[in-house]
Length: 251
Ligand code: NDP
Image 1 (tube, helix red, strand yellow):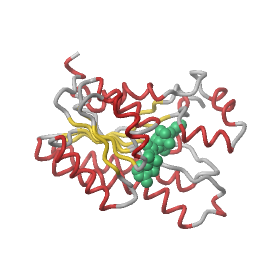
Image 2: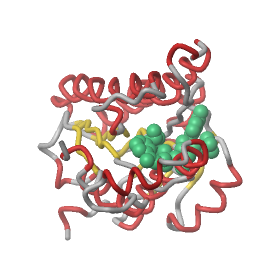
Image 3: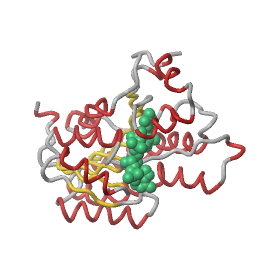
């Protein structure tokens, strides 16, 4: 359908070499976009590039480094001719009780999840404005809504993502740039595979607590990526959309 066609668009996906970012990058590529994925592990990036179409590129990036973020956007524009869609997806968690959390770990989580999204949005803004519009989508979490006793910094970063989304959306609506957030429930990825090793009850608890009765899959993120990247969402901005099998709706 034309409404969802991304032919001729360039999408930059941080953390696109794995998990949810990869699921989104594949959805965007399938809808016709040329995709750039940005992350640190270039071996993993190389192994997934063939699933992202002939023109897909990988840009080695540590999103905790502001200069690397500028270079990531510049490389995408140089090699692919612009950037129409930005997915701020790269993220991490360092689990632990808040009373024990080291300030360095706090900064790592906030820098990776939140500051990087702000800086990448800042870096793409002039290109999107010049092109007459653009799409930015930010990866939140159920931790944008609920408290997690072992994830104070993660929760702060993901709650911040929702409020930052609203600020950017209202600032840039006049430039025809839509900025939205999506809030994944519990999704089967390397990140949560690690969590399941540390928290043995987690797997069954998620099955019990999720109305859909299953963990999310990375393929569940292709649709939301295409919707938020396409003309179908041209009057949708500043929202936070749950992609969670009903998790957040259950009282
Ligand atoms: P993955 O571990 O599969 O993906 C994390 C991605 O982030 C990887 O591509 C990783 O690439 C990248 N990344 C991490 N740190 C950096 C960094 N410093 N610089 C560049 N890239 C970085 O996990 P998920 O797919 O689960 O996580 C993706 C996002 O989804 C995160 O923001 C996470 O918070 C969010 N999320 C996940 C949920 C889930 O249940 N899985 C639920 C809610 C939100 P590399 O290591 O190569 O740099």
